[in-house]
Image (cartoon, rainbow, N blue to C red):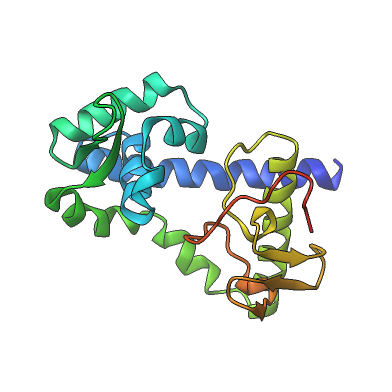
Length: 195
């Protein structure tokens, strides 16, 4: 078996672990895994991207799927809608106080994986992280991953995706472990300005 096939097999098994851990939390709280992901996303991102259209792209599902999940979360009083004053059909999402109380436990769903990573050396972790960031970037470039808020696609990033990374917003060199996969300050790079 080729190494690429073995890596894909390994990634699939790790993906299965994430799904299993999400389902454990979902059963505990009577919500679905996608509803957990939406809650965690809304709790950790700017309000202006917490809307149906963006969430559908983020999780690569239909707007109808997101709308159904949001309806349940609003009915359970875990999320609330902040309607646009210009167009009452448009809204962004915010967590409620009940939702915020739940977020802490939900955000711990991947703790078993986190604890396992503690068994690796910093050098091994840096190499793994470097590979993951490059894989995500390349999948985004081919359109397989639609939304990416990583340094490599940010207008503030300057580098060669090798060993030289620089953030113009922070005005500093970045080590590989400084590269962000989900940056709060991310602003998409204009097409044709990569690197």
